[in-house]
Length: 218
Image 1: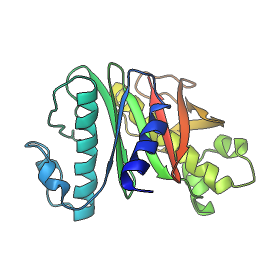
Image 2 (image 1 turned 135 degrees about the horizontal axis):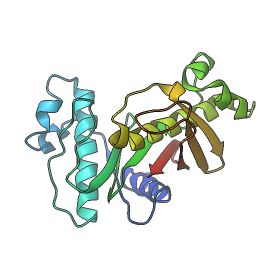
Image 3 (image 1 turned 180 degrees about the vertical axis):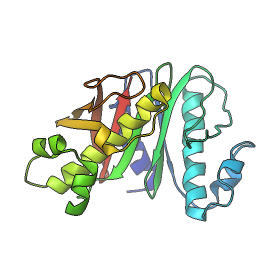
Image 4 (image 1 turned 90 degrees about the horizontal axis):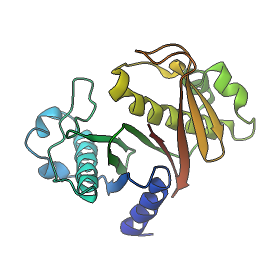
């Protein structure tokens, strides 16, 4: 399958994870895209290895395309001290990438979170790092490592969605994930910056081209 067709299928799957007002864009990560960075962006990636520069540039390209889908002018997307994108006023968004693709989701309004991962099993020694005992207790025995990967992707998307609200950094144990088909619930295991223990966020999971995609819209 060509890169164009593969990207289009992933974009279609990504769009199903979010409300209709969310713009989604997928860009391939290729060497040499640093020339596409805008003033104010390149300084945030200065000195990084070429692979990191390529994924950063692809993420910004995807985000600018999503901005245009919203009818907004393209803009430089700088990075704050916690490495989170700084969106234009009134925009909520999120960027994620794996080794070959960068994805961006944006809308006018509340925060979003997105993640993209290879849909493969994670090694068993990583399970207790990523999953709370509650997480593991809800996962099936069959193909458990792959479901742990889905939990990881769900936590990544949920973390990104909450960050603009709490500005809080935390580890995997802060959120418990309950997978339910193509949906998931992320529950706070303890209070975080005004969000109480038991506070829930809801998200969706999609599979396409050997990838698992997760999205949270607050």
